[in-house]
Length: 338
Image (cartoon, rainbow, N blue to C red):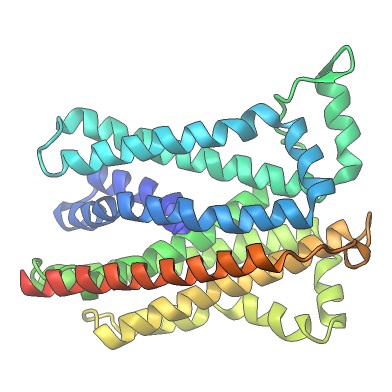
């Protein structure tokens, strides 16, 4: 979900402002989904963040304290961006002035890109304790950290941020195909064919972006990663799969060049989920390798609180069931009104 608001929000407002009539409709479809996508992105995004805080507490907290104010600002940036995206969504239905709605769209897009940068800075600094003293030395007052610094000199920050944006582009392209197949019954076949081709072109751009900035990130700033991955029996399989994973959804999207097919569109969604999952696993492995230079994570004592975990998993399963029911109802209503 976060992938879609990371790349989808800027794309929606760009298409609405500069696109052709068909392109504007594609942008409007993305914008109409943004409130839903934002809600689920926030809820699903909190879960991995909590686990990161538990697993890497001795790295997470010093890193985020050094950039405390930008990190704390994420909450406010997301809330303002959420409201701005809603206003833009309402303006598409003439329930809010178009000019102010469009300004809200630009504001939301900019804020979500900034949130992505701050998150990337935090995760990069987390894995680089050797840079903490430099950041502290350049930003303290009488020995107290000001918490105002974003370390742009950190070599992984920009390529990692752009690499993540490449994945977000491909996810947004996959979403456009899913939307055209399942949520565009009020549109004609000409639009659905246009959306399918737009999705294919956008995904191709995303793959190029993914490959270019991913190569810079891995081979340019983390040259140790690939040899170490090949030396690990599990990562020897997962790491190459991660690099090649966008190929499958791209093939599925290209096969729908003349219009979306529901089965292929659903397979595209599952394949794109695989792309995100493989990248998540590989990034987590790489983070463990980076942090492993400073601490043996496996040697840390573990206090497994099963009671809390069971309650969390049960409620999480119930929540997923509710989400599945909501999605099913949306599809059913969309079909009924077509």
